Amino acid sequence: MRDHELRRRAVGEMHLRRWPVLPVPCHIVQWVLAIEDAERAEELAAIEMRCGVHDSVGNPSHREGRINAAVTFTWERQSEGSSLTLFASPCDEDGFVNAHGDLQIADAIAWAQNLPGQVIRSTRVWLGEDDAAIAPLLERQSLNRDELVSSTLGGGIRIWSDFRIMDDGFGRLLVAANGADPRDLTRQMQRMQELGNYRNKALLGLPVARECWPKLDTAEARLRDLADRIADSDARDDTLLTQLSGLALDLASVSTAISFRMDATRAYGQIVEERLEQLDVSAVEGFASLVDFTQRRFRPAMNTCFATIERLQRLGNRTEQLSSLLRARIDTRIENQNAELLRSMEQSISMQARLQQLVEGLSAVALSYYLLGLVKYALYSVPDSVFGVSDDFVIGLLVVPLVLGVWWTMHTLKDRLIKTTPQK
Image (tube, rainbow, N blue to C red; front, side, top):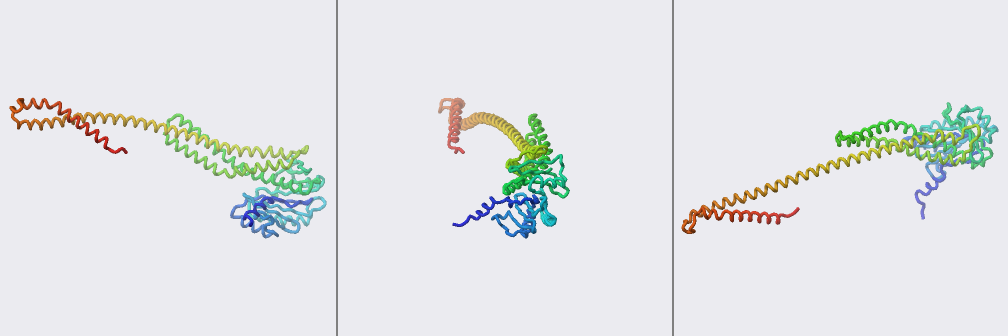
């Protein structure tokens, strides 16, 4: 037996997105980045220079390493970018990184900020032993009290944040462990960060959706105008069909342009809902709850994105229905025209048949006339005493039989000719 070529990557996938067990207290700095394809190799090379083991989980999209004596990191490549997380320790008795550690964190942050990519979210997290350890830090941070969100997570963990971007470009999250098991604390902290990361990624679709609404308004007005013109039957069908095809192409272009972003928004939004449920959030009296914050701001944005998708699909369906109705009308008109043409051809054929019958009758008369002339010339050579009657009398007797014989002969030949003609 031999290993499948993707076995180790498949198993490694189950171990991705894991954090090392967090010490308490500690300081966490995380970036979520959008990386262009051309920047992937440069980013990976910079990360691997700091890695002790390049592939510790058997998957090339995950790296772990150390920046300096106080700071370790994990890096993960994702479908739309990457995430980089720094973990700093030791901390002093107040729950803050000591002066020496501050310099090492500053050095690690400076190194990380030289990496390629665009920042989607960056956060600094302070993790302390309990509420009392976090209280001094709350006073030192410029958190907006009116916007401050504070909740307890499963296991007694408490968080504080106003989810705003500070002057240094980072958001702030303060966390009190309150005796939570280190492994449970690590999982909850990672879920908390993933909640914010995927929330920001999902919200990238909101500006795209908003930009589409004027285009959809214009498309809806065009569709309504075309429907009225089709109902009035004043315009040419081919002109209307051309304009409907143009509208369908415009809608398809909009759909193609936003489909990836909207699909990603839907997927990220679902992950946000899952993480919010897993966090087991409880409200703290006097503070906005994490659940309330999410429902009030995030879900309306998602509803806007979903409404954009539905509206685009609805306009596309209505355009297709209108095109089908117009094509049905065009087909009906063509069938009616073909029926009129067939009736006209039938009348023409009937007239030709009657003319042919008339020509046949005249031809029989003409042939009979010429035959009687030949007979008359033949009778000139025979004396009247031979038959005892005049030539005119003989010609008169032959007129009717000869005409009937010629007509019968022509009719018989025509029937034989028709029967012997091969049918196609």
